[in-house]
Length: 119
Image (cartoon, rainbow, N blue to C red):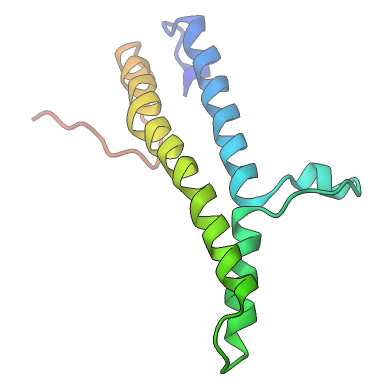
């Protein structure tokens, strides 16, 4: 929408790129670095990888979760807390501020946003 907004300050585009970069970093923390893995480079287990090991390891078993399952859950929970805090800040603060500034500059409405309707 910013490219369709001639009145938007160039700084808005820079802030949008920064937000996109931060989102990509959060995606890597959650799901792993697919680019690095596609080149055969070792990657540390991502949060989703650890949770999947717990789920799939327990799914087909009637036994209790193993110590490895418990440890994977603990590590995933520990790693997820700061990622969630960053995501909340990004969406509730940074993205909202950017959307408000883009709206003020006359940006068109974009799908997925709740319109601010004023009768």
